[in-house]
Amino acid sequence: MDYHIYGFPKLKMINILFLASFFLLSTHAHSSALPRKPSSSSNSPQINSNSVLVALLDSHYTELAELVEKALLLPTLEDAVGKHNITIFAPRNEALERDLDPEFKRFLLEPGNLKSLQTLLLFHIIPNRIGSGEWPEGLSGDPTHSTLSNDRLRLESKGSGVRSVDLAAVVQPDAVLRPDGVIHGIERLLIPRSVEEDFNRRRSLRSISAVLPEGAPEVDPRTHRLKKPVSVPAGAPPVLPIYDAMAPGPSLAPAPAPGPGGPRGHFDGESQVKDFIQTLLHYGGYNEMADILVNLTSLATEMGRLVSEGYVLTVLAPNDEAMAKLTTDQLSEPGAPEQIMYYHLVPEYQTEESMYNAVRRFGKVRYDTLRLPHKVVAQEADGSVKFGEGDGSAYLFDPDIYTDGRISVQGIDGVLFPPEEKETKLEAKTSRVTKLVAKPRRGKLMEVACRMLGAFGQDSRFTTCQ
Image (spheres, rainbow, N blue to C red):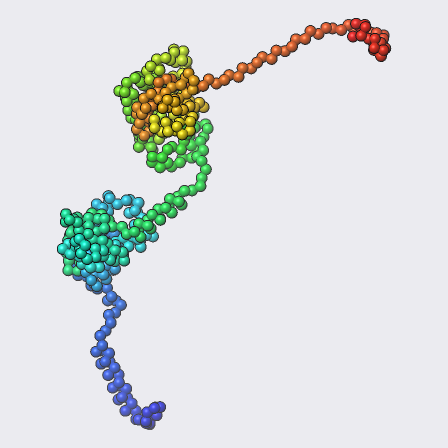
């Protein structure tokens, strides 16, 4: 049976099969002669045990090797090594363990910042072999080289032979040498500008979002303590007002204030108060003030508790000459020494310079004292600071006797007293004593007569009708 194929003459079936088989054989031979493209499964080159990557993972740069594994960069580096030699600048372990900012390290290890970590690590790798002998010197050649992160590193060599990469010095050149790369040890981590900007941007957003709108802390009027605990950063001023911190608690005992072992233990108020009292004694001329704080009252202990809580104090210390003018009556009343000293304690940290600048700028300045509600007035006088007004004023005599950032002691030449409260004298109302003269009673006939006389205007002539 014959078959007809369009475009060809009539052929028999055997001839068609013979031609088809010959065509298939020739096509297969031609395709076998062409070079084959590598399959997708063999894209990554095989890394042998003598590779620089294996040497990096087995070297003493363990921190860098750990970051490379966490950043999932091994396939990328294997591909880079398969194409060309590489140069790795490896920071020492101390630079990544202790010298690195903990907040920045935490930023790099967050899962959402994997791209920044990869950029940072690729910034330490140059796709070219640069040994210690090939370091650029002087102005010869281009000192900048492109990295795997598409940034550029500047390599320099100083006259003393010290090599540097950007801001990091090379502490161990040619630390690891392999046929496909070299590793140089550097003193610090290299941070590209893009990662630094990303870190600053994330930190700014975190600080903004961390501020939650909330009301002012409420103080319980019964216990003089905060109704809800408030977290205060280290070094920040306490939230509780100092007057509530001084107030007693529910019992008659003073309100407890944590010392060095408390939550704000970084303030050792007891030691600081002891230091400033010893400074007063060594300075000379303020023995009476120190004696009142330690022996006559318990103010030294109370001040130590306040400073341990985080409060600051400025002590206006009268000298011995001024304290000698106090009379026995002024000190013998119950609580009088405490009240006198409270008026000399300002719940602020002021120095001679800060107070003088304040009075120069504002004229009169009223400082709060621990003796509520009285304030001490300060003003400029004769190139110094004068406290109080009138005869009871005192000048800043010995400035900055003791200043440690928490307690400031300023010596004055007088004892200050608050202005006397004007007593409102109630004037006794003198009631007028009027002498009432009893009028004689008149009868009905006399009443009628007086009315008739009054009609004619003659009633004034008769005393009976008046």
